[in-house]
Every structure is written in structure tokens, then in C-alpha cells.
Length: 470
Image (tube, rainbow, N blue to C red; front, side, top):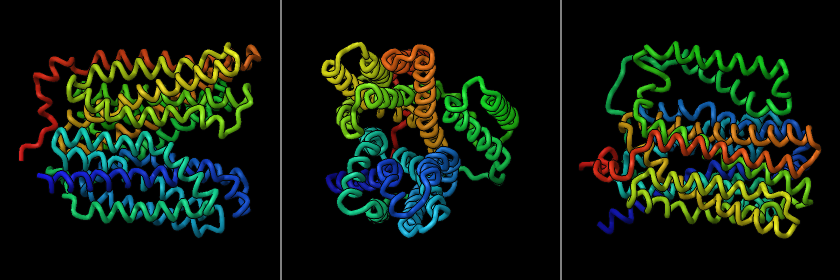
């Protein structure tokens, strides 16, 4: 038993390292743009494209990555993702032109699209219930906390060794992960289909998702009532309708609509979208304290460090609450705490020192809520689906994380900009922008209450959907 426990711990560590490779090359890039521009003599606009293309490709292909993992094997796709991570990092290291740099970053985005759902579904199929919940907690350390860890590590490496060494370390982490996971049992869907891949559905979905990304990220700068924005919004909505009508009667669907017959899975995915929207509001507070309060980027980082620390600590607390109370209560408490905590930063009428104290406490409290939410939400999603669909379901779940964060960022910053243009007051603009978290929180709470089982039902059912029987 001790040997099995040690092996499980090692596998969990390897999976977390696989997840961290994404954050090492994704998050740290944000801090090294000036150094890269000086070293490579590339204009800033191309570097901005290289920074954002990873997230774009990850978001576009994460669902198809999960589906391929179901068919071809979760371990195999984790390995392929790690290999692509290494290839992408090598291209970034040797890049002498913007084209090679962007190609490398795009490959890194595809690697993340394979690694994230494949590792989640590998946890679903490789571990029994209690071990699965523990593994998901550590996976959440890498997924939710990886950005903060990678930012600090990347800044240190870039400062003392040079920015290219970040990608050298990313390669090393990927290789270690591959070595650790070499003996983990492969898993794939048991059912085979003679039908080919749904290329048409995938194509419609990708174009619609590109439109949604453009709308969310560029709507504020273009103007929400600008004809271009309205056209993008209309075409995007039309494409999603076309996608649904095309897919609903097909036997093989790019995204299996049967997943959403589970109220629990639907609730976990939808509440995850709005919880990530809550998390995104920290960006508005960061803008405000730098523009109005005169904070440096480093001081802003110190103001929000409590958020990351609390988030990491509370992930395992959420796991314990899940095991004792079921998923609904910790999800309700965590969403409420996250929304209230983040809203404390809206108290812009306070003088500098009191505001710093209140904002720091608020970010810390928000971290408590978000950390507590992670494991109950992910486990609820995975426990209520068949093993054969673990990859595609994981891909959809992770896609909503990215889209929810982008949505929250777009809505909160648009509110901030609109109020600023009307009133000219940074304080009032920040207050209204940050308080959008209360709307996101209310929607998320309503979803959980309508879709997630009560504690009594959960305990009586013994959560059988996630237990392996030999």
C-alpha cells in the first residue's frame, strides 16, 4: 500500500510539472517583453502578438485536444503536449526573427491545449475517488497557482540568468515530467467509432470562438456600439447558432451535447465561467492603483501576493470540505467569499494607507474563496461523466476557464472605461468596474443552487460515479 501511495504521489508530481510547463512559458513572457525587444530588435507590436498567440491557440484547440486524448490515449497526448512544449521553447530560444518566435509560441499554445485536458482526464481515469480528489487539488495548484509561481520564478530567472533561460528551465521541467509519467497506465475511450473526425463542426466552432475572442478582447478599444464590433458580435452569434443546428442531430459531435444532460456537469462548467470572471477583476484594481495611486508594477504585485498565497493554501481545504460535505456547500461559500473579497477593492474613497490595507485583505479573502472553489468544481464536473468522455469534458471545462476570465476582464474594464469617460473620475470608474464581481458572483451562486446536488443527496449517493471498482 505504501508503495502504491508513493507511486501515486510521484505521478501526481509529474502531472503538476506538466501543467507548470504551460505557465513557465506563458505567464513569464509578460514580464520579459522589454528584455526580448532589446535583445532581438523586434518591434513591440510583434512581441505583443507573440505574447497573446499562445493563449489564443490554447483556447482554440483545448476542446479538440481533449477529444483526441479520449480517442488516442490520455498519456500519449500528455507526452505529445510535452514534446510540443519542448519544440516551441527551442524555437523561442533560437528565434532570430518575429516569424520563428510567433511559430514557437503558437506551438506552445497547442501543447497547452493537449496537456491541460489530457492530464485532467488522466487523473479521472487513473485514480480512485479519494486519490482523484487529492490529485485534482494538486493539479489546481499548478493550474490556478501556476501563474503566480511562474511570474516570480520567471522574473528571478530573467533578472539573474537572462530571459532565454526561462525556456531552458521549461524544457527541463517537461523532460522530468515525461520521465516521471513513463509508467503511468494509459487510458482511452473503450468505444470505437468508424466515423471520421467532425471537421465541419470543428471548423465552425473555431471560427465562432475566434469571433468571440475578438469581441471580448477588442470590443472596448473599438467601442461596443462601433459598427465593426456589432458586425463581429452578430456574425459570432450566428455561427454559434449554425454550429448548434448542424451538430444537434449528428451521431458524432465535436462537442458531445450529451455531456450537458448532467445538471451537475453543466453547473460546474457554467459556475466555473463566472468564478473566473470574478478572478479577472483583479486586473481593474491593478490598473487603478498604478494610474491613480501611483503604484509601481512591483508594488502592485506585492499588493496582490496574498491572493496567490491564500488560493494555494485553500485548495486542499476545499478538497476536505468536498469529502465531508459534498460539493454544493463549499462551492456556494467559496463563490460568495470570492465576490465579497474582490469587491473590497472598490472602496476607492479611502485614503492611501487604509485603501492599501483593505485592498490587500480583500484580495487575500478572494484568494481564499477561489482556492476553496477549485477542487469541488473540477471533481463535480469529472465525477458526473463517463470515463470515455473525460478528455472532451475536461477540454470544455478548461475552455470555460479561459473564456470566463476574458469575459470578466472585458466587462469590468469596459465598465471602468465607460464610467471614466462619463465622469472623468478614476475613483468612481474603479468602484463600478470592480463591483461587477457582485453580478458575476450572484449568477454563479444561482447556477450552483439550481444544478448541484444538496449535501444530503450527495452523501446518500456516495458519489458512486467517480469510484473505480478494481
